[in-house]
Amino acid sequence: MRMLGVSLVIVLLDQITKQVMDGWLGLCQPYACERQHILPFFQLVVLYNEGAAFSFLADAGGWQRWVLSGVSLTVSIGICIWLLRLTSEQRILRWSLALILGGALGNLIDRALFGHVIDFLVLYYDPYYFPAFNVADAAISLGACGLLLDMFLTKETKS
Image (cartoon, rainbow, N blue to C red):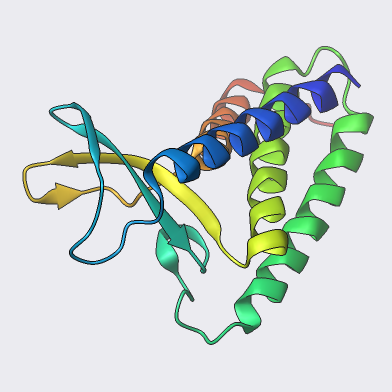
């Protein structure tokens, strides 16, 4: 149950940061975009992503909102069940799933309520930009790395 609390913290942090950034900077419009440069390779800018990762399906016409929401909800339910079945010794796996669950729910809330996900973190080098992301995306990415780490560190027992 503690890991569900971790997921809840991720959801709250994600939703608060998205609303603060959206209220502070507003949506980035072409030719009128307010950006806050934090470091030579990092800036804050608000973008709305109507698709999945890397704006995949962003121009699909609207149906993707409900399909992606359904997928997120189904995966979140599956992760909740998986989390509740894990033992306390499976620390890396539990943390990884909690991060993924929190991120998935954070983006699900945006998609269901607004029809898009609010992204605001941008990493770049000269003309090269990594797609904008948010706290939920970062949590999902860290959770995925944790799943890989757990896979490599966990030895299979042979029957």
